[in-house]
Amino acid sequence: MPVVFRHQGYRGWFYEADLSEPPHVHVGKDGKEAKFWLNPIRLARAGHFRTNELREIESILERFQYNILEAWERERNKRDSR
Image (cartoon, rainbow, N blue to C red; front, side, top):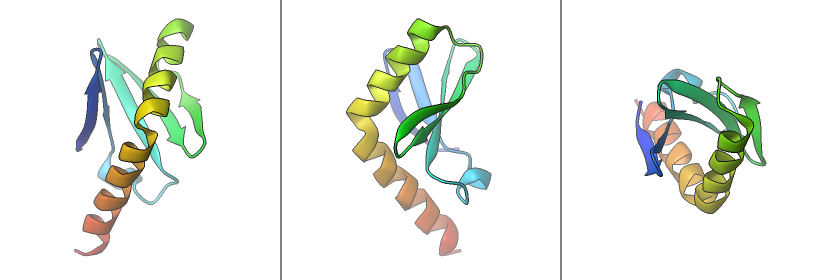
């Protein structure tokens, strides 16, 4: 479960078992966990976050989308090379 970003108290990660799905990231803070598709960025599961928090997360993801997608590809390639 590599953490791919930490920003404003949020952290984003991938689950290895999910790497066969389209690119997405799980985002957590204060015991809550949301799931966002990455290309294009859109909410998959809100995970008890409030609407304003989801907008903030989406803004963070837009800012770091390229880096997160690169990390997704690295993790998938590592898994596939085993």
